[in-house]
Amino acid sequence: MTYSPELLKGTLKTIVLKLLADNKKMYGYEITQRVKELTLDKIQITEGSLYPTLHALEYEKLVTTETEYIGKRVRKYYTLSAAGRAKTKEKVVEMTDFMRTMMVLLDIQPKLS
Image (cartoon, rainbow, N blue to C red):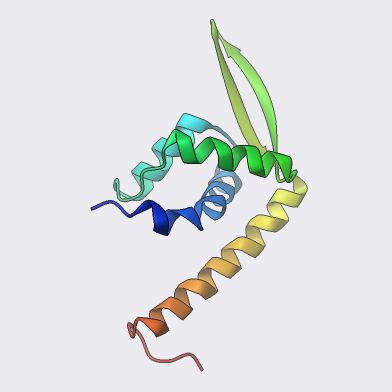
């Protein structure tokens, strides 16, 4: 079972930021494959959603890019900026709190104290 695009839409920036925090620098295809691997194929990020997200993060100055030439191929690597590292921590805290709140709403665990 894979998750719907609607569920992933609001979480993609957090996923990408956290992966970059854990892996220093990554290129687009590598990000998609790592997500598939970590989630046992439950989350599959398409290029159509990943690259607009990476471009938005770059525009927000949360990531920097570096181009590497591998033979005739060009590979663009993404790395967190200092602002990106701070934002990652903030987004992970926000996501964790959101998941706890959803568990309460869905009656999966006792109410928050």
